[in-house]
Length: 153
Image 1: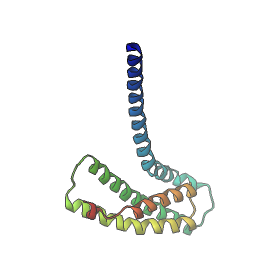
Image 2: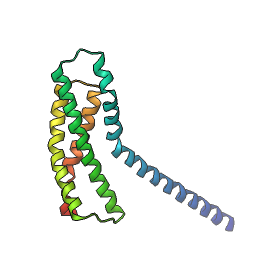
Image 3: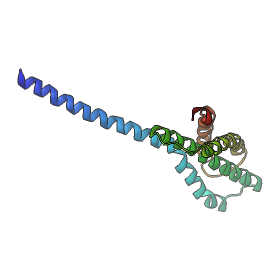
Image 4: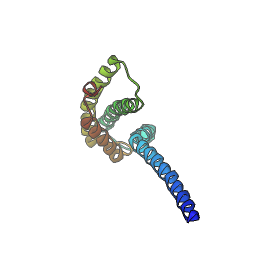
């Protein structure tokens, strides 16, 4: 009977260790999922010059794509700022009121910019247009769903 309780206890400790590792993996995957707009926009910016060199694209389509890429990148900065504020809240780090006010106004501006970016992506033409437009849509939904920083602070 004693051997069985030791066996059960060691399996329980084994499961607790794996559960903790699973939770850590879950947190890391969530972090990667929230940060996926950064490499998408980085690759789109890196491929812009090479994409336009060998193709016949009107100047209007090129300019609209670049406007959309700038607007979407600025919106992503606000998105990252929001999630940075949330992480600070998890670790009980308080930010100054002025920083919170700036972040909230930046989120309002980013709502407008992300809507402009989505419209410009439909008209403009550039590298990875569909992927970047879907990523911008994801950022837009996140920005529109999460607001009221001053209310929650």
